Length: 443
Image 1 (cartoon, rainbow, N blue to C red):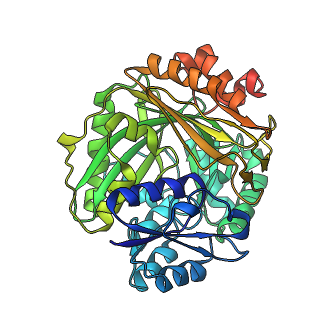
Image 2: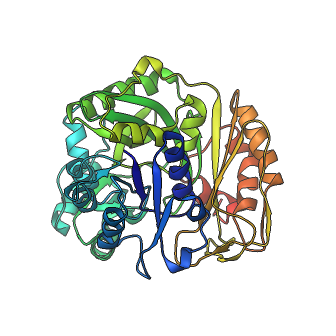
């Protein structure tokens, strides 16, 4: 791998560029007119404007890669990162796709199919449908069997869309029609599945890496329970209060299942955790936004690992080499107001934090204008300490030190979360922000 096209933008594009530099790989970056001042562009070996379309234009991306002499494409996260057709077309063009195979992306992208695939290999899944649900009568029968409340989910969904909580049978007719409509609008497929709803669950995810030859290792777990509208806000590793032996036992089952599937590259298995039990909900076949907390506690560069695997090299790492130490927390910094509405605009005030155990992944600089065209994520603040207490103390200090203005951000929300007694002792669930009075919850 000598020259790579980054099919993404913002902080993850900068992160990929840095990993390529470290590996001696030249970088070609694409951009739209709204993004012409992105920080990673001036650091790239070559840049290509892909017009006023979006980073979803497969033809433009592959044309940029092939005409500029690239031999690989890194999709980052979001956009086309989990589109099987993009992965296949990239490979068909003679380029290396830095990620799983198209077949693996397709298999895991179908959430109901992924449930069945992993359940058949011993991974615990939530009670619910094991096949797609195409009609209301089928959904009603499954919900009656597992008991309300239930979740209706788009089989091909993601990003917090195409999900609806159904409290009782009287709500099912409306919810089914609405969720199917959303699924068709956002994902081009109205197929749904039904899962049992767990009211007090935590969101725990397992980071794995596979070489495509049958070796799959676990890189530990993360807790991503602090969410709003199914979007993660704070992540940490390892999950507080869960015994390492339980994580290891889960990882062993999951790695065996994915080894059987000859899984390639990074992947994240997401679980709900309640009453000392894990329940698989979905798998993401890409680098995660929150990958830095895993890097912080393992010392393993996950993007460089992606590049290594994509070069068709068998994993140098084995499970015995993966040792976690300390505790890491990540706060996602979004350009949004207190009502979670996007807040684009010019950055004229910028003070980023520093000090031992403090890392800031961001594409911001003074004079940068945050566009309204894309996701509101503008940075990730990561702090690591010898234990959770030290990581929390460093994060509190780093948040106080950080200043981004005059646009609105969620920095104040993070300060409130970090000072909340429930969060400080790890007593959170996926309903935490919804219920927190300081975040506009109902208490």
